[in-house]
Amino acid sequence: MRPEALAAWTQLYAAVGLLAGICATCALLRTIIELQSGAIGLPTDTWKQKAIWFPRLWLRFQLNYLSGFPCIMGIALLYAHYIGFDAFNPS
Image 1 (cartoon, rainbow, N blue to C red):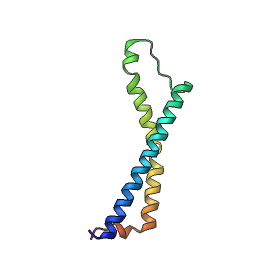
Image 2 (cartoon, helix red, strand yellow):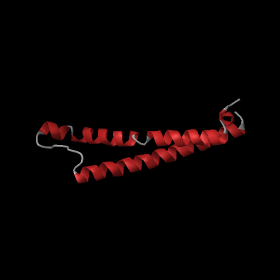
Image 3 (tube, rainbow, N blue to C red):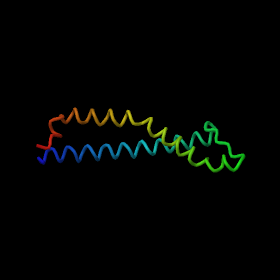
C-alpha cells in the first residue's frame, strides 16, 4: 500500500471515529433530556414494564444515534471527495 493511501485511510478512520464519538455524546444528551422532560413515556407500573424499561431506553438511544448517521456519512464522503477518491486506492 502506498504511503499516501495509508495516510488517507488513517485520516478517514480517525475522522469517522471522532464523528461517531460526537454523535454518541449528542444521542446520549438527547436521550437524557427526553427522559427528564417526559417525552419518552416509559411506564413502570408492573414488573413486566420495569423489566423492559432499560431495553426500551436503549432502543431510544440507538434511534437517536442513528439519526446522526447521515451527517457522519456525508462528512466522510465530502472528505473523501476533497482528498480525491484515487488517494484511497491501495495499489
